[in-house]
Length: 155
Image (cartoon, rainbow, N blue to C red; front, side, top):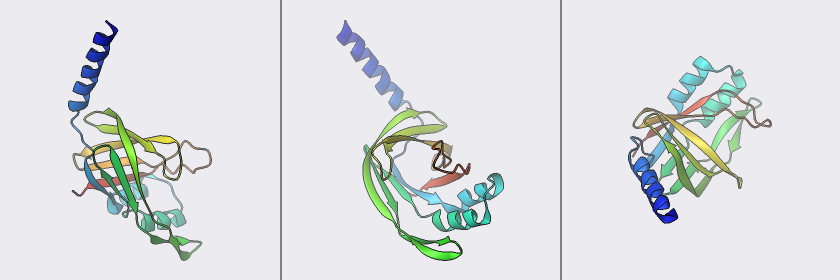
């Protein structure tokens, strides 16, 4: 009886996963223009933070394949105390898992960049190839700027 129940639950979960209207597969590139438009319209940030984000956004790519996430952030330069400084890029490959999927969002988890803990990320879809993530924080050491970073699927 236990095996039958486990089989039914597994099939139910598989059907739910296949029924989702959204998909992460492909390469998503940060959309600087949409992100900065939102930030300037809805967030209250200082001019120095605006300049920093304006230099940083629009560069990262996320590529989702069968269970793997490839994150690429190229090296760039950002303003720090009025002076342009190098910002170290990085590349990482990690496993990811979809936790929830609906027509409006996909919640997925993966290891935190430069950490061991898993972190859940929500892609909020505005169109099949346009989504945003909330870049605020609930971590006391990290400032919460109430911003969004938009991503477009480019392939």
